[in-house]
Image (cartoon, rainbow, N blue to C red; front, top):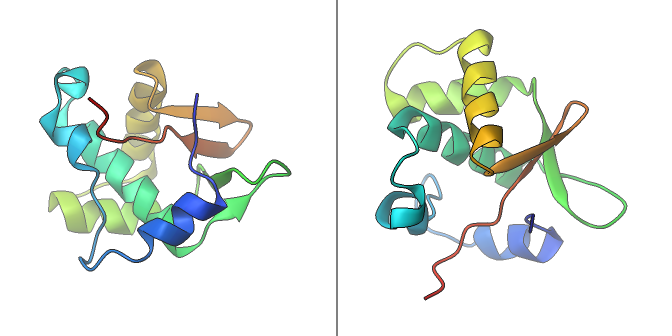
Length: 116
């Protein structure tokens, strides 16, 4: 799986909107079967990663699966109540569809781009 790295994080921090949302996640057939709530969870994780990334020895960016900001960002994006149990379910769905990879408590997000 290709993950976001230091250069990707630096580039994405330059976006002008409050939240960065990869358009391919919402616009391409590849992710059509992923539930909307799960897509919002991906966006929440990505935006938390942009604000406070951690890096492994290979320079890949990750966040911890219990980062409290994920809940707050997802509440704001989805306009609904979210708790850690829901986040855990969304993370499992993201992992099942190949949009994230876990190594212990570390979460690596699949890099999404529009390539045709």
